[in-house]
Length: 257
Image (cartoon, rainbow, N blue to C red; front, side, top):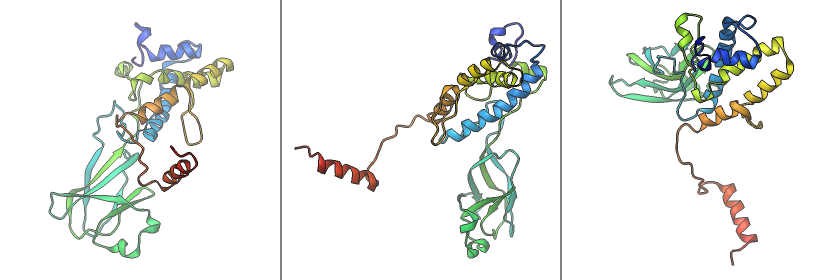
């Protein structure tokens, strides 16, 4: 569905949201819908990024390639201001002194970085502090566009411009119903009725988190992002001492013959 289609309302997220909110365009305006939708997309993007471990999701309305190579490696400097587009950093690489090959740095918490590493010319690690990315140590050579940051960014916000009415959601469109339900819930929580709000809450559901079982569309969205990369996972006991111990105990108590 697109955001708004007054002619073909069956293809309009706004009109679906009006149905769930039991509202009309006079008391739940399109401007209110877009405001709530942008807040919902923020939340849905966070859910997708928490559960998408292998693929690294991106808002499909974005034009970024999720690689930033605009920062220089400078002699005697190791601080790079974090860009507003870097919502989550996945990998840091630096260009080596030959000017062509690259080296991947590993993350290391600042509280375990040694004093010697802080001033070393061997650049192996990075850490994050406040609004800055720090390379551990100091480069003894310069490299233009010598720091590559692989990152995840936030969602692309929708606007009230006429062209945006034709836009579609930037997350998995199988779950685009959430883009109608979540703004409808905003309206219902402000205006009621409460019994309709409860119906929408159940349909939206709960994101699965540690110790919390998921439900509804949020659970389905999270599971889908967990399984985006179709890799067969097998269980190995070769290096699992606990599993091997349990298996040995079971074999001793319940021999095969």
